[in-house]
Length: 171
Image (cartoon, rainbow, N blue to C red):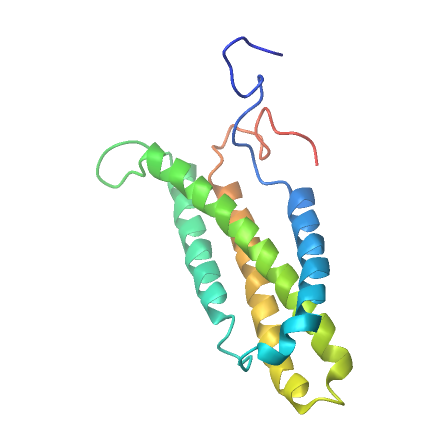
C-alpha cells in the first residue's frame, strides 16, 4: 500500500538478502570478470594460497558471531544490561551480514571467473597452473563468506518471526 510521506512505498526498507539477487550478482561478476581477466591477467601478481584467506577469516568470525547471537536470541537475552545483547547490536549485525553476503557473492563471482580463465590454460601456461590452487582457495573462501553471512543474517531473526520477515518479497 502506498502511504503518503513513506519513502519506502509501504515496503520494508531493509529485508532479508535474497539468494536470487546474490546469484545474479555472482553471474554478472563472472561475465564481466572473465572479460576483464582476458585483458588484464598478464598484470596480475602471483595468486597464492594466502590470497583469499582474509575472506575465510571474516567468514569464520561471522559464523562464530552467528552462534553467539543465535544463543542469546534463543535464550531471550536481548535487551540492555549485563549479559544481554543490545537490539541495536543485532540490527548492526544484520547490516554487516548483508554487506558481507554481497561482498562474498561478488568475490565468489570474480574467483570463478579467474578459475574459468586459468583452468583451460593450465597445461599451456606454467603461471596458470601455479595460480590455480590459490584461485580455488580464494573462491572457496568467498563462498564461505557468503554462506556465513547468510547464516548470520538468519540467526538475527527473532524466534516468532518468519525467517524471511513479514514484508519479505518471495524468492
